[in-house]
Length: 123
Image 1 (tube, helix red, strand yellow):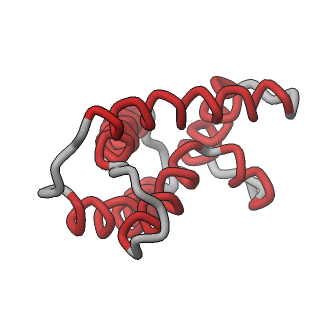
Image 2: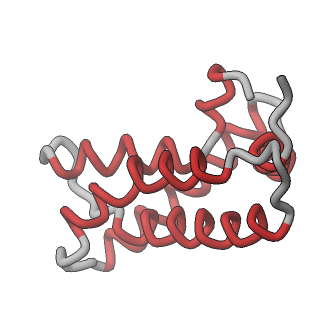
């Protein structure tokens, strides 16, 4: 997986925004987005375990996801979620989908290709 493809992963956007929130740079609580990102990672981890083989980068995938998503989650999970936070979450996802469409990428293909790479690392 090429590192320049990282910009197309919603979870990267979520993690960056989460740290901006933690440092009081942006106002809206991203906890719902973090829940979505963590849930996706958990479900994808189960799928990767199911497809596990000797080339699978399972531990790398788990480590990276824990390292990226759990610290901001733990720092903000007790914060109250307002109605504006829910609206922001919806807008955040819509902006991401518009970005993906504008760049000519396909979000499903991006995540499928990443998962396929984790399952069967190419040398």
